[in-house]
Image 1 (cartoon, helix red, strand yellow):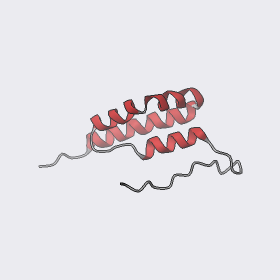
Image 2: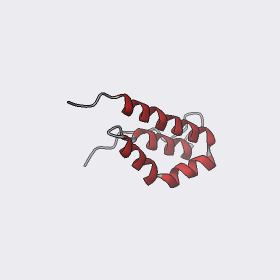
Image 3: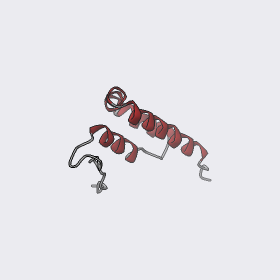
Length: 83
């Protein structure tokens, strides 16, 4: 089983406060696949409820997440294909 890397879920500005939206954003962006566009789309579809919640609760984090998806897609499309 893969080891899950540490992700900071606490807002450093508020002592001990849990920032749910930041946690969702970090988890979604950290585990974003880079193998193929199809895998990336699958990641989005599997987590659509979390994405919709983020859109409703924190448009700032939602916009960052969508920008990350677009950037990852561009990176995948620019990667040279094997022989």
